[in-house]
Structures are given as structure tokens and as C-alpha cells.
Image (cartoon, rainbow, N blue to C red; front, side):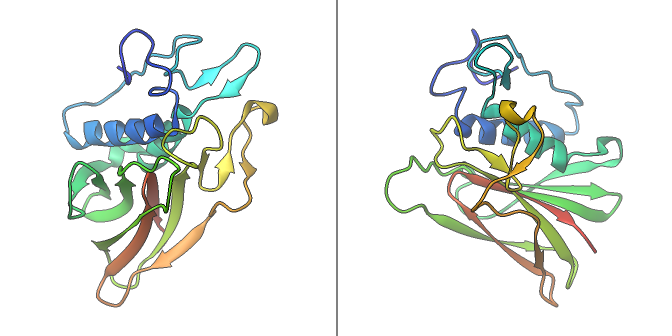
Length: 203
């Protein structure tokens, strides 16, 4: 599978918006309880590929969505993924919860409302029910706009060809921030338009 047949489309399959789609698509597939595995086409030179290994070498935008998905679904053999109702328009507010047994371990909150780089970027505040006073590490999938091909980060880190794919902290991008639910188990998370947040339970 991948975004568009025939290698994808320039300006659609190779932009940050495709990273958000890849994350949402992967988690939705897992939530069905039927789809156990996904293979994404990775033809060299195709717009939807995660890397370009020839000159000039580059890490492409879709890679970051898959990195976020892997973070959410780590140790997937013990994980059960369920959809999460975030309220509002379900076409642009996409949520998932990951459980080990009855214990909620991870959350994915995806704001698919397009931000094209023009004007003020909107923000959605999502409230999720979790364990009272529990703490959560927030790892954000971020880009300048849905149409950007570069400048994408996950948890404030870039994984680019010039560093051989090793993570490098990017100034101005959040890394390792921790949020705490209130005593009633309400966790409020702000997610900008064309952005996603993966939350991992600390305690």
C-alpha cells in the first residue's frame, strides 16, 4: 500500500501531510483487529518513498509519520489498539488508545485539519480520560505546514541524511515534555492543525 498508485504524486505523497496520513492509516489498520501487518511500497525515486539513497541523499517527509507510528505500536504483540473519540469532526480529529491488558499505555492524537502555512495556525485542545494524576511523555510530529517537504521532526528530532539518520535536536521544537492528568483523570493536550502527538505513560 501507499498514498497513491504509480509511485505516488509530487506535492501529495512527498509532503508532511503524507506523514500524518501514514500515521493515521497505520493506527487505524491496527485498530481493526484484523490487519496484522502493512507493507508500504518504497520504490527508489518515487514520491512516496521514505528515503532517497542516491545523490542528493535525503530523508523524506513520510518517514516521520512511520517513526511516530512505530513509537505508538512498539511491542505490538502485547498491544491492543482502539479508536478514541476526540469529539468534533471525525474526519479531522483522529484518536487512538493502546492497551496492554486493561492498562492504557499510549495515546495518539492527530489533528488533520490542514494548515497550509498561511495565516494563524489553529489549535485543538483534546481532553482524554486516563488514570488520575498519571504522567505522560508527549512526542510531537511537527512540520511547518502540511505542504512542506523538509523541516519535519518527531519529538523535536530530525533524522536526516547529513547525520546518517542519527537524531539531532531541532531548536524551537518540543522534546520530552511531560503532562500530568488532574486528580479526576482528565488529561488536556493541545495539538496544532496539521500536527500529531504520541503520548507514552510514565507512571
